[in-house]
Amino acid sequence: MTKAKTIIDGIYNDPAYRDSIAADIFPTAIRRDQGKILAGLIDRYKPETVIELGFRYGISSLWIQSAISRPRRHIIIDPYHHIPHPPKLNTVDAFIKKQKGVSFEERLTSQVYLGKFLGERGSADLVFIDASQWFDSVVTDMWRQ
View 1 (cartoon, helix red, strand yellow):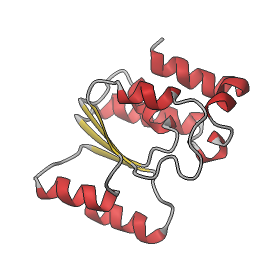
View 2 (cartoon, helix red, strand yellow):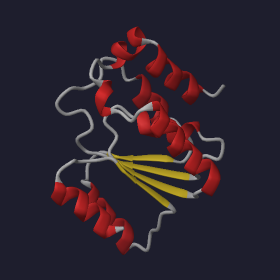
View 3 (cartoon, rainbow, N blue to C red):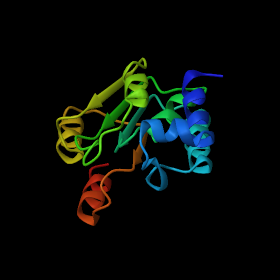
View 4 (cartoon, rainbow, N blue to C red):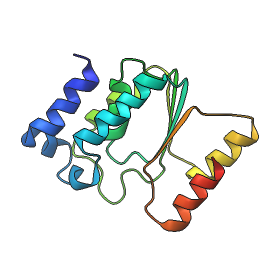
């Protein structure tokens, strides 16, 4: 079992462990069945570059990193990921930020970062949008892709 899967199991199966990270992980984090679909997409299509918009506590990032065929590049964009409540333990943050190929953008919004990225001829094989739930932000993120 990989370290990502060990953390995932703790979060979904052990309420004390989950609450030691943050009491409000659920219902905002993706469900286990959704996470399995996300990891399955990574394994099936083997994307070289994945862009993830939104991080919060990093549960989706764990699922991406738990895939057998992890992406060569995993770009995570979320300058607001711990507003208003930072985690009690930075277990997931620390793990994700140490993974090979992961880059974490905490200064720029997705709209600004994607504009620069695409302007530099960057491309992604898979984009997972789980950021702001505001209509304007989501439409702008989708339009940029």
